[in-house]
Length: 300
Image 1: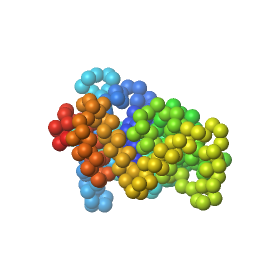
Image 2 (image 1 turned 135 degrees about the horizontal axis):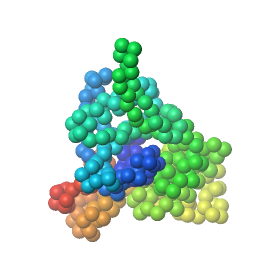
Image 3 (image 1 turned 120 degrees about the horizontal axis):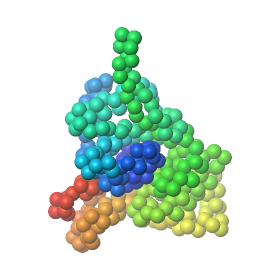
Image 4 (image 1 turned 90 degrees about the vertical axis):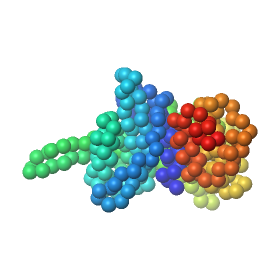
């Protein structure tokens, strides 16, 4: 569940993510023109298994029309051995670089554990007592970062990422309110707002006592927008459960992308979208739609 939710989120807010993690690099890239590549499969030489990269985007550089970089993001539910992760990212980056002759920026997003905030990490290879090679990648440990610092950021994505962070002195209901308040203020369309709110609602869970406190906070003056958004989110999910609600959110996101790229959708196209009952299929359609040249190419 974690991987899929965050793949959807990071694709929808890719520019925000790069600005948060690599602000200096972001200044030199056309972040409004990412091309998300089809799932790339590599052999994990340590485990002997095939692995698909979580997210791989080709992004043009501002320095020249022909210059591009690859941004590779791995989403890890929990941090494990740092050395093993570094060497795994190194192997993927070298395979990509050798295959495409394109520089790679590797990022690991830890939902739990890892060092707080964005950290530049170095993996190294040694032999005969010498340092033979080094490799740079970046890690972002959400759970140990301070939510307050990210709730003050201008990027809409930060309001969702903050839901997985250390709330400090805030109770869980206060934490949820603060995150949703920023989601409500974000200058995004309804489909993207749903993705942000869904992360907040999914990762800040409330027990019965906390739910009572939360409802009392919703009733306070100044929280009307959050209460309205909460009802909208709940209405989307209530008919057939949370999974169907997520499907509706994904359908809205795909429809929004298609309309921005190809204009208003015909009724037949909308009906075909409504008939898709798999979140994975909708996610793959969203990936393909980012680089398709026509609706016909997508079978719509």
